[in-house]
Length: 210
Ligand SMILES: [Fe+2]
Image 1 (cartoon, rainbow, N blue to C red):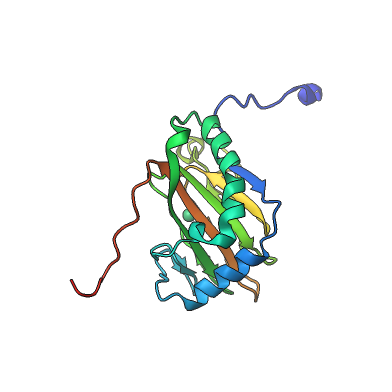
Image 2: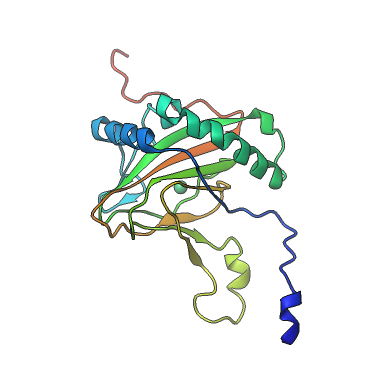
């Protein structure tokens, strides 16, 4: 069709996937995160595969660190704007439910998951060496497109190519995973769950003296 240039996508529904770039300096936050990961005895392998580690169940959370304040202050505006774009209400009541760091040495990756009822997920790509794994997203319309005649590769999983300093925001129901880290250097992210009237973090397990 010669006139295809006059066509564009209608773009009338909310876009679930947003990617931005943090313009600040991440040096101090990267150092702090590595120190924390090295020292923490609360890391888990839950969704992490082949050597990955996460502080998703740790009591200490990155958004409380002094080194993270500039980033989280910067993130308030895009978080709000995207919240409004989705038609969400009560933006003034949103807050951080939990934040954590993920660590992928060579070979590691994160398995398929959602963040369930979390209103908004924000991932800061703190350190993404070359070929250390993209963010991979499953088409939210998978079951609709799946019932059509298509060429291979047009449905299912697609990568969002991420670089150090990128920030990706998406709703908690999006199914996602990461690619495998093929670099000798580790891949590090800081992940944040944002919700309205966030529930307090779960109580500390195995508390002594009870
Ligand atoms: Fe996730």
